[in-house]
Amino acid sequence: MLIELLTQVAVVTVLLFAVFVPVCIGRRRLRATRLEWRRRVRQAAPVSSVVVVVLLVNRITRQRLPELSWALDWNLTPTFYAIEGEAVLWFQTFASQTLTQFFSFVYIFGYVFILIFPVIAYFALSDTRPLRELLSAYALNYLIGLLLYLLVIAYGPRNVMPTAIDTMLYDFRPQYQYLTRQVNHNTNVFPSLHTSLSATIAIFAYRTRREYPIWFVVAVPLAASIAVSTMYLGIHWAIDVVAGVGLAAVTVVAAERLVGRWSLAEDFGIEIDEYAARTRRLVETIVPIDASSATGTDDYDEDDETCVESADSRTD
Image 1: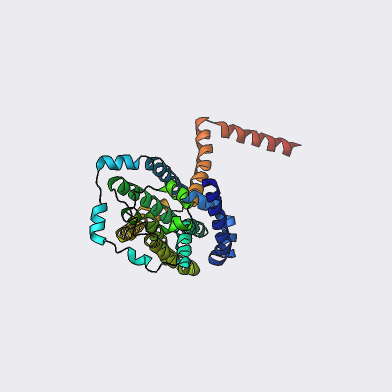
Image 2: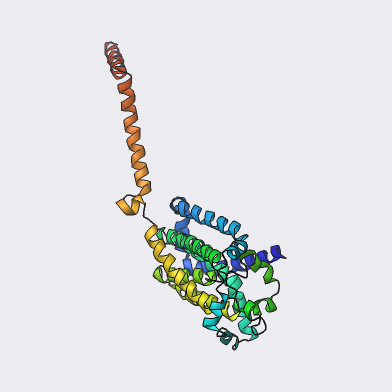
């Protein structure tokens, strides 16, 4: 069942890419990317490696999170319920089959699409800084989110009020339970990473609206829909969503300050490729001189031989 669901998500995501990549990115940038992709990969490789490590740590650690969280025993579920009460039920007063289908779609498929698409879009930019900042923000979201999931035990509305809240996502598509169980636990709802990552992408879409005006128009409503879907489907409290937006703002600012902190290009005005080429040329010119000085009079011997050969040719 899980393989079938993952295949379904992959197919839908690829279809969305087929539509939005040419529309939002454009053929000109795609052609330029084919020529410059090696340089861009080199520049983005360090932060990409960090993201991979963070995701692996996140994957391994989450298996033991409930056990560790209960050892700390900081359960904020009663606090959240005392603050919000049944306010989240307001979203379900608008429930309809059409809305349930829409919010279920954006929660599963829209979320995967909005996570991956900007990575492709920013890779298509000649300046890799937006890509590196986005990937850094992703890593920070997951790291801080993992830490908060460890510290805070919080059940979502559908677990606290099972008789009052309809589990619309699973009622609409029961098989989605197999997918959501792979990435989260019932006690990990604060903050909403669906919201934080979507809001992060919306902020980046706003900052790059000149480069990608169509993506900005797509990303912001989609990110908002994902945030609303978490409450409409009874998965998150409004507090989780607000915390997710706050986490997004913090990670975007932190990523902006971190990226380029140790960059030759941005700290000292030195282009890395140009610097490497210059260093290589310098080494190539110095090495023969050092070799010559180490061998004594080899150059003079060669010159003498050249002179003798020239004299012989004149005699002939």
